Length: 533
Image (cartoon, rainbow, N blue to C red; front, side, top):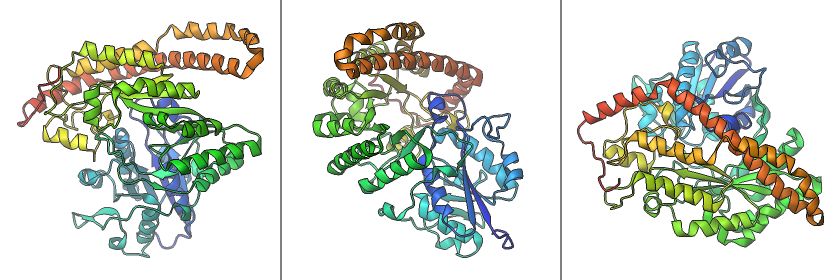
């Protein structure tokens, strides 16, 4: 219960900092998570409530930083005391930091709430014993309003759907809340509520959910959509109020609801023409959308310049294990189609995916690395992200590995390592975790190299060669800019990899990993498939 004598209350939503430098650190300084902004916007319409969002990964130089990293929450409480603090648990690797901050606020008398993909049923007890008073188990826009009314004393907490809390030492789970369907009744996300951040890339959405049912993914369920007009309204609102130019459509699969997607692209094209400004948009899309030239053409005309594609693996058996609905033999030709339409392609891969016991498949590690390198080279992907498999809470992959007793204990290899950069489970037989991690570095190291620093300079010196494209200056600029940008990014990636390697050595992960492996060997029930080598 809150102090009833207060005229206004404050909710602060915190997006916890990454535990260490990783491949997402740079981009995180230019954007923020959409979910916390949506929840904050819903609360901002409530009577007697002020709300703010603090993104610890995106703090401008004037932001209150702590010596240990993240925000200085003691300073924030002195300047603007929060009565209730919500925590974004959408990234499992940030959970230890989330609990650390939650304990600080709870010890100071604030009510603490957590929500996000991490908080599946298996992790609710963990949260409620780690400084969290209430766990929201679904979408938050409606749940947070009911819960705040309960905290005010206007509603019985047992009547709030979609939460978990402790009552006399026992965990209470209230009935699930139905998924949101009518998005048009929600206010447009208000990014002005994010304090101290410098946002250059704005996340927007039209569709929630994904029906692909990939084994490793937490996003499930029938896709639920809002109308194209709402997405355009979100973009135009940000352009007009915040001068936004860059957008990232966070829908897991852009191109779902095909006809509506094409209609949105045409609307976005007309909007840009009306304001006399070209916007830059990135989307996540399936590789097989290359078979739809009408869709790709509409996307390009709308200014969508970059596509992030989950290739996952060029190896057929691994694609089957992941439940990916694409064949490896089709990947090369489909990627060429995206390049033909002029898209900048970001390829995402999962290396060393654990196969099911029934799969009879053998491939030496050297050959696996060779396959990845050859595929990346032949597809001419502009940027590459290769990660290790992560058995995230709530996924079928985690449940399968738990049955085989292959996941390292979290008190040895904690949640902070669940970002794809570290091995967190026992790999298939004849493959060591050191080989797995070394293989990823070899693949990425071949792509992101120091030599591109010199090639960036070469690109600059060849800029005058554009004179040979006077007949089509747009084509000349496009070719030069793409080459220059890719070389710059590849050199930047080399710097990122060196910094990450430094963090890895300093963190002492190797020692923690050894303890986890020894503990796992002593646990009965370890089952490592023997087919893969």
